[in-house]
Image (cartoon, rainbow, N blue to C red; front, side, top):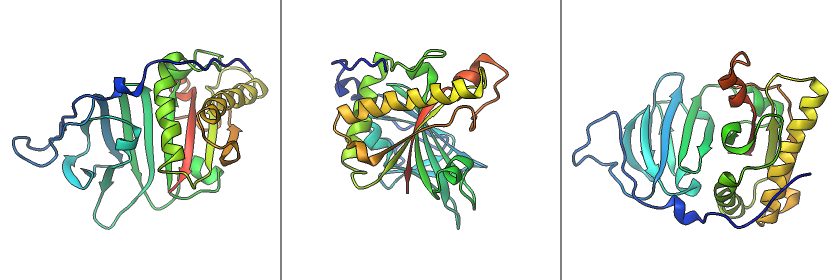
Length: 234
């Protein structure tokens, strides 16, 4: 397996000012906080939800925050009256751009069901940030965020097992895609274990094109589907 682990940018690249930008009123309203320079867009589906950060009201989805790290993103919550979310999906687009999607419903999503889980937290690493087409080498630009991911898994989630799932678009044969998706998951596994995450806690799976997040009819859709995900029970 081709893998390059080396020193790169430190987490200091992920720390400056946070300013909450909401769909509600700004001024002196709660939610205007300074903590980092990672832009975090928060959405909910179906419909909208009320967002809080560390217990402070931010506004309704869709809204944006600027946070410092993955650990801070865990403090972002969304709620509706008499409803709870079943999936919190953290989509990492780049070291400074992240999307958080809260999915509400009565049943687990297809991926959670496949893994035998209920309510889940999903860290979604997109292909444009981590992999080239038909490749499984991690790009150096993602090393700092994966280092942050390892810190979260060894602190906040130190007692949980983690599913490391690799995915592909629909191009190529099923056998090829299964192998490619597994190698992508193994690349993330190798990085995380080299940064202190116990191997016995990581369950590595290649899921090929079984769980697309977008249509495979455009280059953008295919890029969205080429990804790795870390799935944790909540």
